[in-house]
Length: 396
Ligand code: CTP
Image 1 (tube, helix red, strand yellow):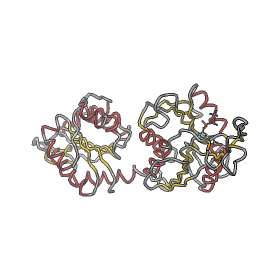
Image 2 (tube, helix red, strand yellow):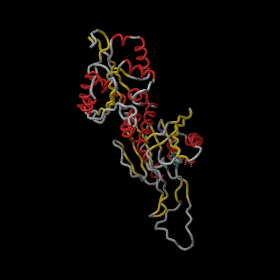
Image 3 (tube, helix red, strand yellow):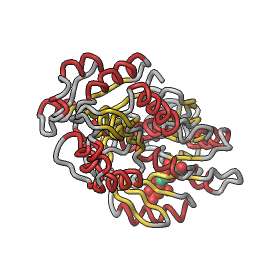
Image 4 (cartoon, helix red, strand yellow):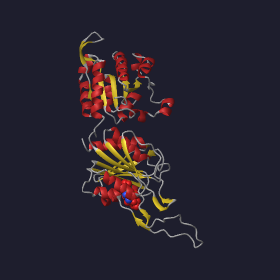
């Protein structure tokens, strides 16, 4: 559990003191805790005690220049494996159920793409109120899981359901949520191609392109994080191998295809590599010299299409995903590639946007037989995580 990360939202209730103990339990288990403290929460526990126990900075302002400079609130909402709300007050539940986003905690709950676990705590009448029960149902319908509340004597002197679950019970619910939700691709195998290919012209020259390999490496990492066994077939790039990923380095398109075929069978194939469409027909055995008769003529022949080959293979992976880097008419070309190459999705990106090729951000559209889904521009790692989650849904 040592690499797991929790985003812990602490709402305003007397039970917030128990959240300090929960934080201690999580840290003791090696789980990273990044706290968000609501304004009301800060009436019950101090940012200092929360920060000291979490061993991290406490976030509380939606419009904080310092926080946004360090980590935008959208990124913050996705920086963990699980979002935990403890105590989940009636107010926080109502905001989350209705999609309000007026402060950092509610914005985070609306913006996150991670599983959410709530530990409600409130007065029994508030808990039993039809409004809260309605919100509970809505949240459960949205996939939020709950631990507690318990029944018992309350700080307000009443008795009934509404006490926040004990820290140990929340801790165990967190462990269960992390092990279940975090590895939806356990037991699955994926092949990811990444980077450019380099096609030799002679012993010193190659035909290649500007692909950095970053997006493909990020996808391999994101799939591995979801428990998938990943073979990353990489052209010549200088990106570190993601943790838990098997990497096979290749140079040419034909080597890349052979490495992919050797990695079959697989459940998923993601062809992110910018494969050179052509290669020189003949590779000169010695360096081509200037002769005074003008430049040499290079005759090119077509390379195998790895994506199309995998899509039509007898051992076709269940989900085959291609990428389309285009400079114009991005979506029209992507639709064409989907049918021509026989894959299930084309992730289209517009490389005419400055900084996409080799940069850290990507704005993509997912094209399937069912239509087009446009995603906002995001860091390549975030795009990769969202793609991996979407792929996991195909196997749930
Ligand atoms: N691809 C591949 N093997 C090739 C060429 C492309 O596997 N020889 C894959 C890429 O990894 C990507 C998708 O096909 O997933 C689209 O590649 P792209 O080069 O954009 O498509 P082309 O078929 O070359 O089409 P065009 O020349 O019209 O751009």
